[in-house]
Length: 271
Ligand SMILES: Nc1nc2c(ncn2[C@@H]2O[C@H](COP(=O)(O)OP(=O)(O)O)[C@@H](O)[C@H]2O)c(=O)[nH]1
Ligand SMILES: [Mg+2]
Image (tube, rainbow, N blue to C red; front, side, top):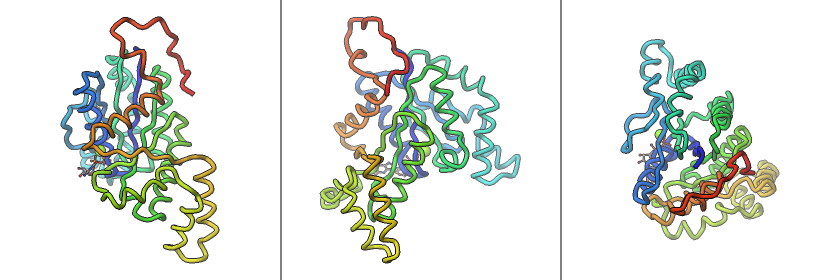
C-alpha cells in the first residue's frame, strides 16, 4: 500500500484536533485503517488514542515546570528535543510501514514560519517514504471580515510555501455558519480579487486601498486559496475533504479492490 500521511496544521483553536478525530471516526465507520499521531506536546485528551504520541517523549508541561520556560519557548524546546531524538520518532513510525497516518500538529505559527521545524518534519517524513499532504485548517470565523481572511490566507500561504508539499486548505467549523452567511461565502472559497478588495476597502481606511488590491491580486494569481468547507456534522462534507487529501497524495483507486493491485511504483510522483 505504501506510506501516506496528512500533516494537519493551522492556528491554535482552528479545529485541527477535531478534524483529526473526525477523520478517524469517518475512516473507522468506513472500515478504513488510519492511525493518529499526536505531535502536540501540550495536547490534553483524545477520543481516539494516538498510536504515536510525542508526549511519550516529552510534554510541554514538564518542560515548563522543570526548565521554567513559557508556553512558546517550551514548545520550541520540545521540538528541538524531538529533532535530537529522531531515532525515537523513526522507530515509532516504523511500526506503520504500510499505513495512512494523520498527524495532529500544534498551532503555534512560529513552527511554520520563523523556525522551519514543520518543514524539517515534512522532509523527514518524505525521506521515510511517506507521501505527505499538508492540511491547513482555518476556522470559518476567519471569513467574518476580509481583513481577518487576508491574515488567515497569509498564514496558510506561508505554511504552503515553507513546506513545499502538496497542500489543501480546509475551512473548519462550517456547522457554526448560518445558512444566509453560507450563501455569501462562495467568494471566499474561490475568491474573486475585485470583490475581495472591495470588501476589504469597506472596512479599512483609504490608505490601504492599494495594499488591499495587491493582496487580493496575489491571492488570485497564485490560486493560493481555495478552501474546502468542512462541516463535521455532515458525512458527505467529511468524505469530500478526505477525498481531496487522498487525491493530493494519490491514495485511492488501487486501495479499494479486493484483488491485489498490480505492482506499481509508488515513488514520489504526486506532483
Ligand atoms: N462547532 C464546532 N466546534 C468545533 C469544530 N472544530 C473544533 N471545534 C471547537 O473548537 C475548539 C478548538 O478545537 P480543536 O480541535 O481543539 O482545535 P486545535 O487547537 O486546532 O486542535 C474546541 O472547543 C472544539 O470543540 C467544528 O467543526 N464545529
Ligand atoms: Mg489540537
